[in-house]
Length: 121
Image (cartoon, helix red, strand yellow):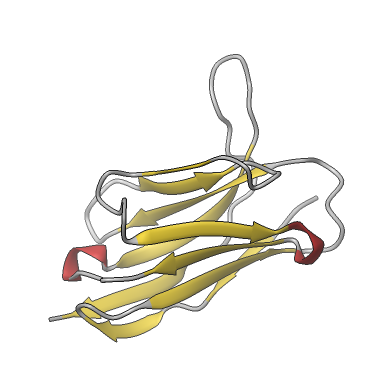
C-alpha cells in the first residue's frame, strides 16, 4: 500500500551536514506519522526521530537532539531528516518507516530499504 524510499545518504566529514528524504509511493490516504531509524554494523536498530502526520509534533533520540531536524511535506508525501554537526558515531544505514498508533504503542508497518550515511573524522 505504501512503499517508502530513502535517498540523500553519502559520505561526509565530521561536523558536516546531510539531508535525507523519504518519499512514499503513490497517493497516501491513511494519516501515518513517520519516523527515522538507523542501524550501525553489529548493533540494534535505533530510533532517531519521529513526526506526526500533521507535522505539529516531533521527538528525537537524545543522541541526535539539537543536531537533527525532522520535517515533512504532505503534498509531496515526503519526510526529511536534516542532519547537522555529524559525528562518526552517526555512521549507519538510515531507514524511514510509517508510524501508526495502537493501544499497545506505535507500529511501523512499512519500511524503506535504507540509505547509507558515513561520517569520517
